Image 1 (cartoon, rainbow, N blue to C red):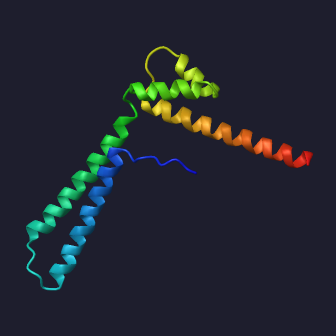
Image 2: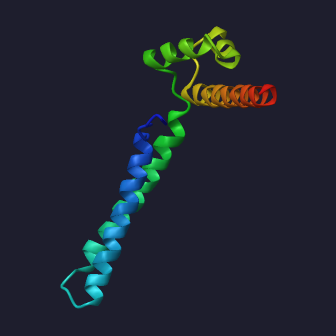
Image 3: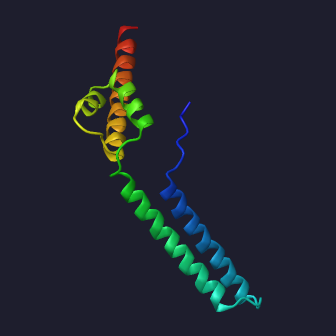
Length: 127
């Protein structure tokens, strides 16, 4: 079963901005069908959506440069028991950043998949 990963708040902000744009398009459609919607609502929706999308992108890009939290460091040390990439990152001086931790976690997942594939190939060759 695949583990659920909650999206980053920058991703959520960007998605909310896109949803605001969608609602604004609905307002434009409603105005085209002669409903009394002013330009201020449409302009406000476009501006708010743009600000949310840009703010979410900025938040997402800056989060990779922040140092790991205590829970993130604990998870890194747990990964270091079985993954040499995580062990190398845990042994370096200073607190690693979220970007480094995500990269190492991806390397560890890929290594685990390769080991599992090699085991299955060996098992199939023996039987």
